[in-house]
Image (cartoon, rainbow, N blue to C red; front, top):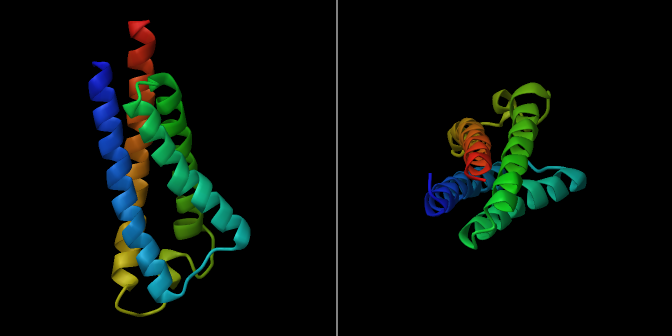
Length: 135
């Protein structure tokens, strides 16, 4: 795979993740389901900013650093989301979301985030291996 394709596909994954993330954040606000201050720090740095920085690095042809950050951000986000949306019994769990117009949006985007983060992490591992083979 060429360097340009890695940058393009990685950017596509990040942008898709951010669109889903924006819709999920919208549902959080409308349903008044908020994270702790420590959770918010993680969300801002790992889930929002790290993928954006990874995309910038990929587009600037800093592929190994960008791919490594993409893998860390996607798998970190995945673990955080799986725990908070599907394991921990809390207001953030998909089955404990209060009734409201955005309940379905919250639940669907929680699943879509997990899928996008698995895809992003998997792509990152694949791209890392491809870059390693190229030297």
